Image (cartoon, rainbow, N blue to C red; front, side):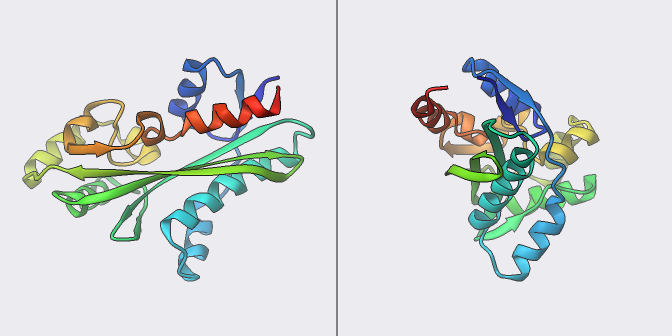
Amino acid sequence: MKIILASSSGVRKKILDKYKIDSEVVVSNVDEDQIKEALLAEKATPLIISKNLAELKSNKVSTKHPNRIVLGADSVISLNNKLINKPKSRQEALEILKALNNSKHYLISSVCISKNGSMIWNHSDQSELKMKDFKEYQLIEYLNKIKTETLLSYGVYQVEADGLNLFEYIKGDQDSIMGLPIKQIIEYVKKLNL
């Protein structure tokens, strides 16, 4: 049985393909910014925001595809328990990198599996990352190598590409950091006997 990936992330689709999980993409079109704002107003933590977004995406697509297994996912950056959003401009991307510069932060990747409009399983994985200490011109040079469209879609560091060089250390699963804690997904999907 083919699962539905409720995400426009090309990286997440590649991870599923790499592990030979048959999937098709159906984008949820959830207004992430609006949901984040509402959750932040309620003092939600980055973990809660990530979990909620993964579940909303999964459930929304799942209601339109009865009896299908739908996988929703969301990743957020948490710095001092504050949410760091994807940049809306190159200037904002630079400000984010300056905030993360020479500091430890967490990348939270949440996934949710839904069927018939309801969550049947979820999981969140947290990775710890410490960025090296850079001068501002070095951060600008790094950002200049990234297309604006990529930057605004995927965030400030592309761990699967040059972004790896930004870090002093990364503690966590590579696939989770790229947006999909695949080992836990595989374990759960096996139990479903698809």
